[in-house]
Amino acid sequence: MKNDQNNKVHLGNLSFKTDKETIMKEFGQCGTITEISLPVDRETGKSRGFAFITFETAAAQKSAIEKNGIKLDGRMVKVSEARPSTNGSTGPRTNNGYRSNNHSSYQRDSYDDQE
Image 1: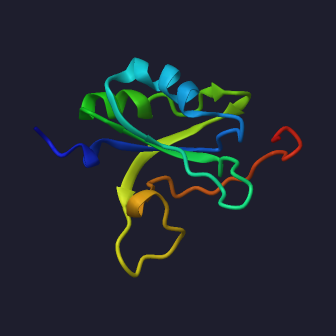
Image 2: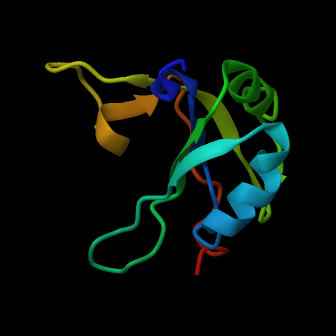
């Protein structure tokens, strides 16, 4: 079986209200999900606004990436291939050394809708 670490996607711009069940419902349509990582802030316990999904197959990963720009919990979600970060690389380190492959930057439109 192929190493499923190569089948990981990054979800960005998630609502702080988005949970694993919502992600599973939306992206489970793409194929079998082997892991969902939804990091939370240590102090508040709230979502940090991004997630990683690992799929069983590359076809499922590709299908998920095609969902880039979908609305989920009222937010336009950025979906991109996650890639392993390398030691000495710049940028934040996230899920097990993975980070988004999306090099464009964006900011949240409003924090008012995030409770």
